[in-house]
Image 1 (spheres, rainbow, N blue to C red):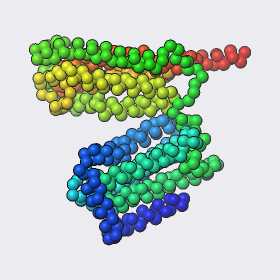
Image 2: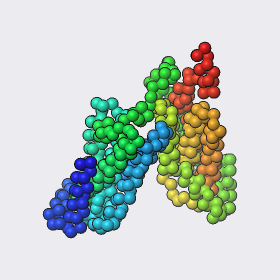
Image 3: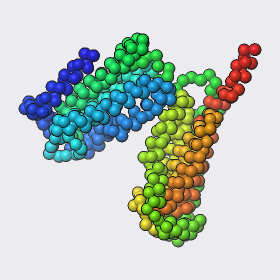
Image 4: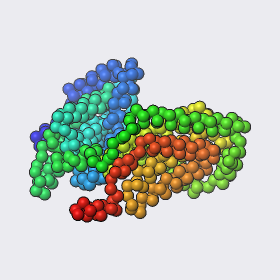
Length: 470
């Protein structure tokens, strides 16, 4: 509570000093801004380095960290910790724009601008939200760490927050007082939320903890650990890591060879405009039957297969797998499938170099060639992976929804991409070859559901229990 009060007082003093334009503070602010700009601007390496560090405090990175953590917590049924995490993070999203508007401070003007910041300057949103999100994650998951690791992790998280704040100064988009204001407000807000959580525990008859030493809910330590030991999981007899890595390498090369062998003749057959499988007639038929309503439907179908959407779906599926299954194998399976798909698509597209259909491309010019369709391949891989992980682990009716998604989502994306003039039918065929060969190979090599092999059938557990008792 003392740190909360000190931080709130410091933030109040900074707000007053900024509003009245206190000369000593402005002198320091502008001197540091100009000095750092003169040091960073001439070096492309430093500009890129500071930009990369700054992105660790961006909305995109922080929001996904919170979403993944909240998904894991919900999967482990830790609803109070989920509420704390979401409420704390949302508080930062409210405080930042409101205070920026209320204070109304302009951003620094430096001699050699290397970055651009939108909106007003005080407080620094990156500094505020990075402190809030990283501190909240630390307080929630600290019980999962062994005691000897807690101090090093605290130091590492503190270093990340400090580097993010410094990067905003180095890029010339914030003053020193903006960053200090963001940190002090972050300390005050996280301290208030942690105090409210501890009072909530006290009211429910639970002991009050020391959050920085043992986390907010020490008794949740087992549920907060990413994985747990399962006595039923068999050992990997005869399948060492080296063998699996070698097998993945062989599978990747053979799949890549199949794609190139299929794609090169298509790319050079009549300049890529042959009518194999309707490569010419189908795109032209779609182009001649376009309508406003179908345009809206297909643009959504195209977007659900793009890189950002697939990454978002993959992060959620991975978080759910880790939360529910509590093993790394399904997550490794998911990551291997998706990274393999991306590299196979980019490599094949670069070698084949097939032109897009000779109709209007509704999505505009693309950086890659037409064969194979990356949207369709990624959609098949992500939903097939989800079905492979879910289907053997439950007998609930909703497991068939994942099977339906593995069929219907790629179909929707494929039709949308052809309707919008982005792919030939044989590009879709190439995506099916890519996904089919690669997912099958990775499944066979990694065995993502291997832990189920020695576990008793859930439907037979009562019978087994009775037999054991007898």
